[in-house]
Image (cartoon, rainbow, N blue to C red; front, side):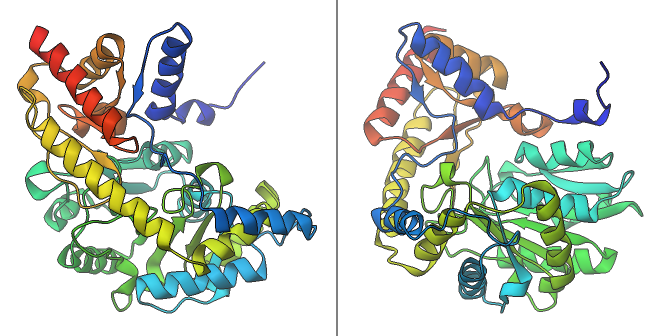
Length: 387
């Protein structure tokens, strides 16, 4: 039997690979502290669950329009307008089962074989994976620790070619927790306008920010016309398993993606869209408490990592990841991750899971209790001291 060449271009995702290894070790009786997976450890707020349950009781269990129910698109458009500072209509907003289908569909609609896409590195692996799948070339732009894991527009100018079609940004960023400044975003927009590029802005961590405010490139005058702004429920509302994402973009692209949804998955779960409406329009107290707790955990893990021999760690501005520099240990990123899983029972990810510029770093998710974080730090310190 034959398979297409393009399917071999798809990459796996490190967090799920390490999760499988960790689960296997747990099944063998080893205690594992999970700091590898990008998933809030909180339950979905009760009011959101109640809205979905009511939707089931009201028989919202049939097909929905492929771009989302009218109520969900209206709620998402209002939310994007309120949080981005630029007006979006329901016709410019689409609902899909998670953010990955939004990323994938936008890239399928905009990227041709042979095109080039500038992607953050270290960065979320789906960006480069989908680019390669489409027969295009991912061009990495280095996120620099000395710049708080941001990139310079000067770097972009050295990478752009006549084949460049899109720039992907992720702010706050996975895996570093870094966030682009207003000056960065304005320079990015001017760069995209100069070279007539699309901007795919993955803003899934927009509400999980700490010492500053969230900033969206969409707010810059003129940027809306060339930007796909993506958000969703998974991170902010602890709803990873619900699979509901949304994005706002120019109407013509939204219409194309509507048709792609028809041909791909038909529609997003109807009663999950009832939950979306409640999440975006209902009380936000649970979210505020969750972000406050994430900030507390961030401070604990950053302080603890900076006490370990050979490890230094910047304090991230958003998301729930730290990306410590481990070059002082003399251990490669993958070896560090393997040792900590096997000997310390602490699951983390090699920085190289996010691209070649991740060498010398590892990613820890602090979506776990302070008690588990402190125990993980103790175990890591013990293993490093024994080397």
